[in-house]
Image 1 (cartoon, one colour):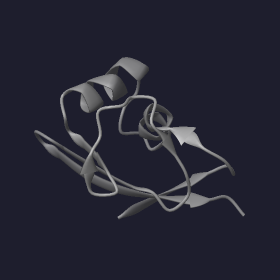
Image 2 (cartoon, rainbow, N blue to C red):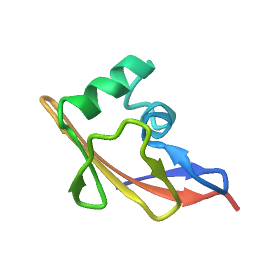
Image 3 (cartoon, helix red, strand yellow):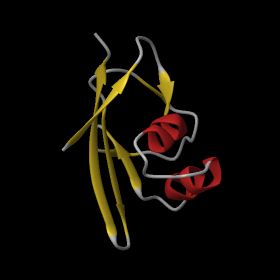
Length: 75
């Protein structure tokens, strides 16, 4: 599992996908979500602007891609 360091406070799902290098553009990140490839904390997620915090786990499973991320707060 890859850990993604975030600043304190919430961050959107789309920002995390871009920050982690999963998506190069916002449109790519949106496509992962709208196509149903993203789960947050084990539950399917369809909200592109979902607010995430440290400790949340994101799983992306798309054709040719399987990624698991854990958000950790910057110290």
